[in-house]
Length: 193
Image (cartoon, rainbow, N blue to C red; front, top):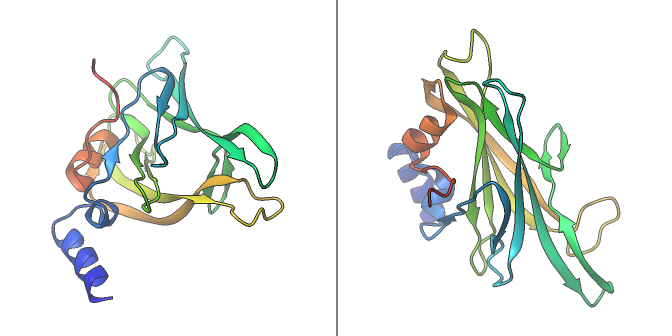
């Protein structure tokens, strides 16, 4: 109990994400447009992340991202790709979006891969559009943990990102990517090669 309190207090004082402090080995998942085969569950089996662009020929196109885990479950006689929804307090999303305007990105995410007993973590960052795309506002970071419906509870997905908490940034930002870097110490997930 004292160790966990120390981690959270230290992370708060150092202005870094408690999730990153709890899992210093957490690895940022790097992605590119298209189909990405990457083990984000930490089980040694490749999962899929699909990122496609919805262009509209102006500065406000956006990316749509969805997550998939291959299930080979002998107990339930299932062999299939399961979509991994993001379960927000206000409902379920089968995808997340990344977008904004020419000046700044208003919605983005970071996925930290799981390893062994540590679940994958998803962090969404959102800035409200109040006065314009080029304005600075507080950013809301929403934290999720990858969960598995081990009991096969009817109506729930096999895998899903469960919302843990939402936290406002300390400062105001135009671009949520800058907020990720300055507030949480997490760089971009986009592959540059």
